[in-house]
Image (cartoon, rainbow, N blue to C red; front, side):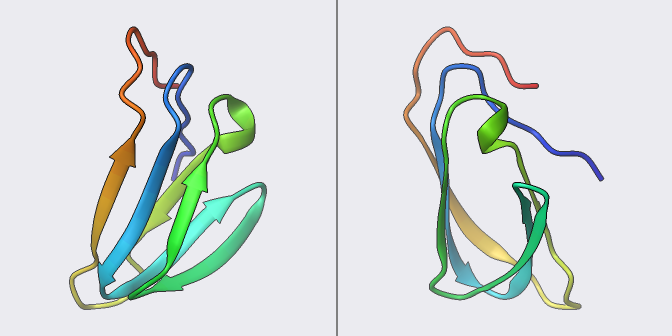
Length: 72
């Protein structure tokens, strides 16, 4: 499992249904329907979202859409 972050874009997620685990800032945080999380630009915003249930995890992913951008 790998973390990812952007060099120019802020990113956020909003969970529509299901549950999972969000890895961010060296921690693991449970997420479920209605949860919102935002990730700043740079390594401080590195994150990973994992579906840890046997059901579908649906979420919206939002971005500031700055260009150019690089994902690490």
